[in-house]
Length: 97
Image (cartoon, rainbow, N blue to C red; front, side):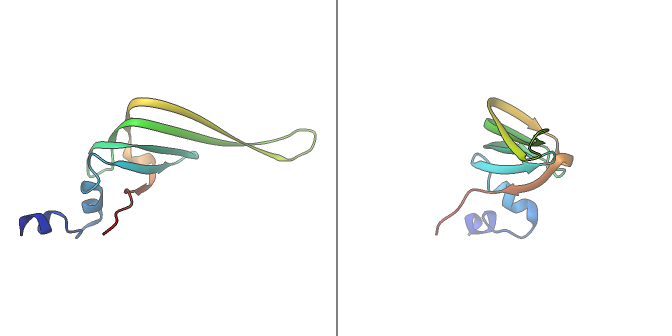
């Protein structure tokens, strides 16, 4: 009975709690995206992620053709501390029944 109660989602942060030690997706301000293993978090959504892939997307305008040029920069980090005030979205891993 206790395991059903532990896996119940009653508040928004419960979904984050259930994602501990699993890979999550985090969208941040300034067109940054993270995918990594959630090691810890707090009520402000400060997070510690491990094995992180960071993707930074930037849009530039070509001076001659005025076309938008979209560039993505990727990097892999062993650990990353994410400050909660920059978090826009947190997506837990897909769960199948």
